[in-house]
Image (cartoon, rainbow, N blue to C red; front, side, top):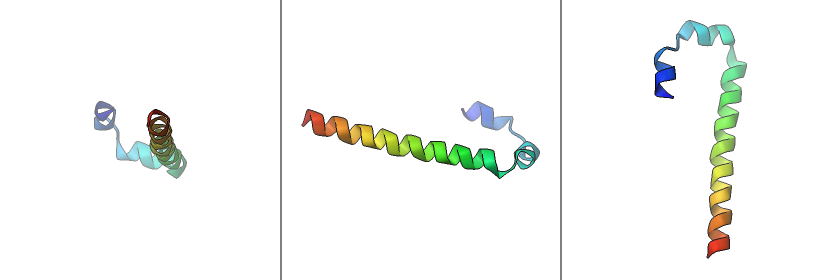
Length: 47
């Protein structure tokens, strides 16, 4: 993933606008919250 960021140009981000970045942020939060919920659920089932 870091290799993808190395070749990213700021002009391309500006051209794309805020919507793709907002979507990426929402997906990041969803993965963090969902992963945490799964860990809590599995931990409570195993305890």
